[in-house]
Image (cartoon, rainbow, N blue to C red; front, side):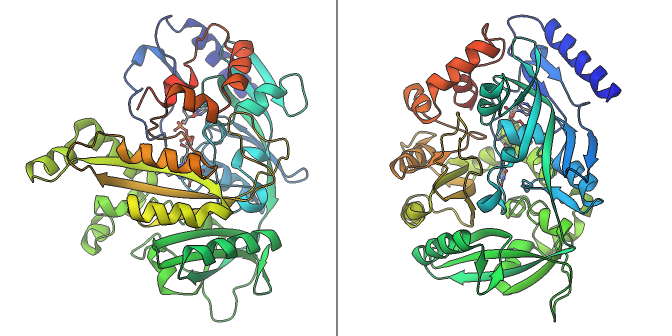
Length: 455
Ligand SMILES: Cc1cc2nc3c(=O)[nH]c(=O)nc-3n(C[C@H](O)[C@H](O)[C@H](O)COP(=O)(O)OP(=O)(O)OC[C@H]3O[C@@H](n4cnc5c(N)ncnc54)[C@H](O)[C@@H]3O)c2cc1C
């Protein structure tokens, strides 16, 4: 704790000394943002990478105290030794606990545990006006606590967080259940998430993979200390690829650790575009580099130097628009969303993840209805532009579709909203009120400027 206090004091004084007029940006070794426009101004960089440690794990109270830039990989390593894990572990190893609050985090336990930040009990925050405050749901900084989720570092930086943990078993036993149409899949999601069981067996985890309009699977996981008869634990960090196994087998068994990182090894399925799934490419690709942060770095380099865009141009292919988004719609509108998406955008596979807010009070900058079950849909690829279509055409269509279906869109990637639409969706009055208290001089950027302006 003494080292933490010293690191925090150091961060605070470096923040105070940042030159005026430069856009402040959090410096850390990894990022999972998919907006690359705001990375240029080095003078405003506030290096916080040293605040990356798990401070304590308390098995009695089932809580952990972590520094803000601690990755979930490090937190999981620390808690599994105590037979515990965070309530929601976002799938990518380098997502940090602070980043999952500021940018929202979701996983297959979210249908009963809510979003990742909903198991954060309190946070120590370096605010935009340079104070260090502790915010919780019921203290004098509760409005900051409620507004930090989806604030993307525009109100302040979480420097430590106390998070609730849950006990684990040795394995997660999986069932992959196929649905031939989206309506039946949505109906099953609603029933499974309401009852917490399927076919008489408990469901602790639920997510889904859409391979096409006629082929979608729900993957239902349950904690188990024993291997079910006939099943031995599988490992998808080698030559085999997890997402392909979903269509190939109806049951599977993973250790808890392998289950939590099942999507990281191949960045869901996105490693395919980088050649890491080709049998030869995979054998040559060092195992330690089969990780989402490595792929993300490669994509960032490609974006910076426009390598694939130039190659497409030379080959006479049309330009492509990156469509890298997570959205959620009420489960009752999921089939409508998927129908329109298959017809108009056409990316597959898609990831499905049911989520219901755990806290009935809700979260001010991401106004989901706590009484509703939503389904997050993730899609990460690029779509060709027809002649005359400007960049943003496909993302804009998705933004409108999501709004028509009473849904929301995460802001970790490109957004094209007008300022008016944006503030209607993300509670402009609520944001301005909290910004006025914790960053009255606008030392940190404004949420709209950051999330839309920096694409
Ligand atoms: C292809 C792709 C798939 C994704 N899939 C998922 C998914 O399945 N599940 C999921 O949960 N998430 C997913 N994400 C989103 C990811 O969780 C968010 O982008 C998250 O914010 C990243 O956290 P990070 O720690 O890497 O933060 P960074 O990328 O470093 O930062 C994200 C933002 O949060 C701010 N920030 C970071 N740390 C702090 C802090 N301590 N205090 C205040 N503000 C801070 C930064 O200023 C920045 O604006 C996905 C993202 C991508 C690109």
